[in-house]
Image (cartoon, rainbow, N blue to C red; front, side, top):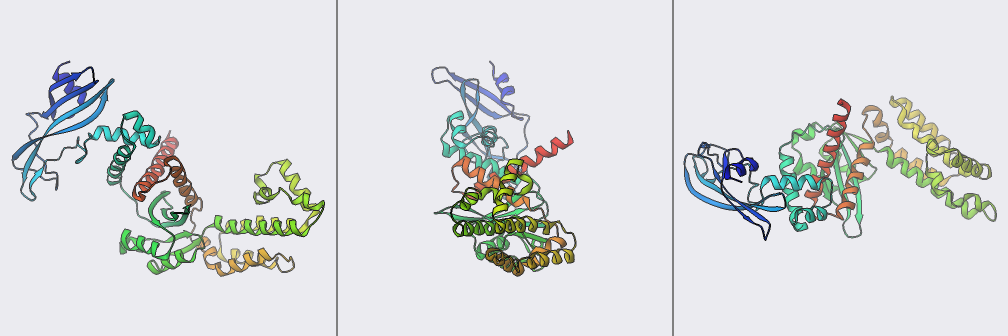
Length: 411
């Protein structure tokens, strides 16, 4: 093959291959690349302005995409140009990824492969170290993040993820409109969320936030009201129902130890049945629950209270939702269910945040979906030490899924 054919294969506009060398024993292909004579535009690598003249010519060795079964190496000539604003600077070359020893084409290919495979598998495919693949993927994600437009944040979702005994909790702030995480912070303290509002958002951006979906963790609520006083706090439905499930489970345990003999057999092994919604059960499971309810009325009352509480979020008007909540609490007067009485007191303390859903509708499932994506990334990558890297991976995962759904709808 001639140098002209190699220039066509390389596909760098404004540059040409003037020499090549093939080593069949080592299976390597080395190309020497320089600027074409017709390409006279000099751009400063710092400010992007036009350079006046060439001050120095240098050469850099880059690893490029493999050609057939040959590893490809490039020896690229680049200029040091005189910029009227910045002085002596390296010219900007879009084909080189900064000071990386790899070409931008190779880094983009590695980044695309890391979207669907762990770093270790990609490292074996490209014959690189796993740490090198992670560094390349991080640079690829940083370039992707800079090139995209971000919408105005109007609804926030704040939640935490348990990472284990060492790292403990990770605070996740997400945008409910785009279903993307915005920021990660260690632990789940008030100071953690204060750092997000102080460093990540300007005063104008904070003023545009209308609602925040959170669980009933008090430090998060204090921080949001301190930085965004006009924001409406909406408590997450799934966390409220989780407390209701815990109340049902406490009743189940109390009844198991209170009953004796044969009646214990009706309660044993029914925990997950009692925690499952009625419309998600098949006929056999419903018959099992009906058999349990015939022998234990307290379990029936606890299950019905849990199921009826979900109706609170179907109301559109605040007054109707408040009346329903009060009627639901009034049902507990003669039931003698202490776990549900404790739940009722908690609901009354957070009544304003529950009724805010009627004033400002927020998508509850987005926060849990974002957390599920993050946990999937943590399992696939076997943990992440760099929170910035994990955040970019989660944002790309959410954005690519959104684009796929959009294209699917259009099709």
